[in-house]
Image 1: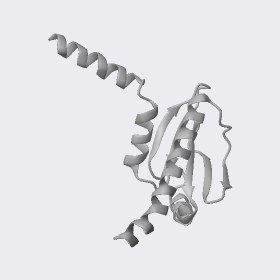
Image 2 (image 1 turned 180 degrees about the horizontal axis):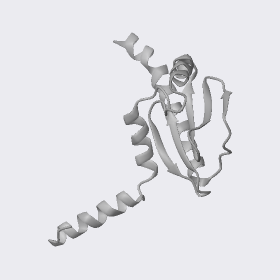
Image 3 (image 1 turned 45 degrees about the horizontal axis):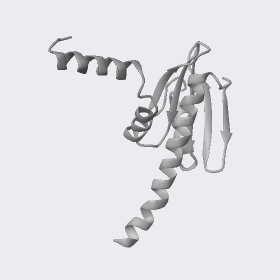
Length: 139
């Protein structure tokens, strides 16, 4: 048993790192802090990928180094497709940006965003709905 956990620990730490990078990229896209040009930058253990997808839409994402060959092969087959899990962000500057992280659990990525965007319109709507149901009103 001890051996299994020691094998999984580096993977979990790596996944958490990619989740933090994804969340940071999401915030930068929201604030309009990204420059949009098609590029692929190699970092220590991941790649930052930015692509134009259609007219005014962009995709920016994190791809772990061990998954980059798979990402490139899929991208070559479907050049205008969004690969992997992504979230549509409307930047302050007006651009539509899809932010993604290839090769990381969708549930973990969504959970990380839910923790940072609790004041979204859906959260406010649900709070309002719950209050009205407590009072006996229906929506």
